[in-house]
Length: 268
Image (tube, rainbow, N blue to C red; front, side, top):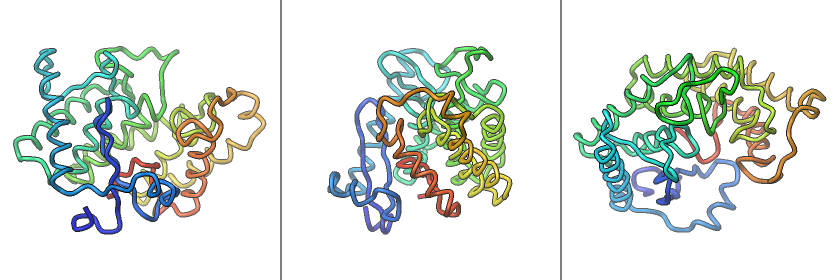
């Protein structure tokens, strides 16, 4: 893998998610991850994993007679969001698009565009075909615009088509309006996960207003209002639900030109 992506190691997960993650050596926690995951995959192995992901998506979409070429389910549910759903799978395939056949690249782009069409008032429902209820709307990294934004960021970086950046910007606007969450400080469904979208948009656009917004969300984490309204954490030190991810966000806020959502980079 080092021949193709200097100074990076790749961690591949081929479980229900069928995703691949690149871990840059400069990223927070790299040394601890490297101590656990020592295998570096070859380009041939990466191509094989991507092909397995594609084959699975094609078969499921055909079996369920979907009007688009790639779809997946997680424990029987057709999720769309970043944690368990279609958006992150497509994002990872775009991250390794050079390993895909041209015909398969086209299937990925068709699926990306289909997902873009599922937008409902700048957001996406957790499941395919659901209607968003305003009183129960999810605006989380795991479900909703703050996580799906990363797919369209990657699509923009690969294709340079402005409609993908425009979609990303709409995700950021919704997050600014509704992203101060009550489910803790974490990055999965917490305030830091929302705020990472602003650091993403800063890197994509260079617009300093996104730094301002990220800073305001960071400040909210230390307010009495947040402490009083936030639910008690079950996994206090975990990366996605606990304070570890929050610390990553606060560190990235100090160096926004290098900020990356942990294990979910679109810039590699």
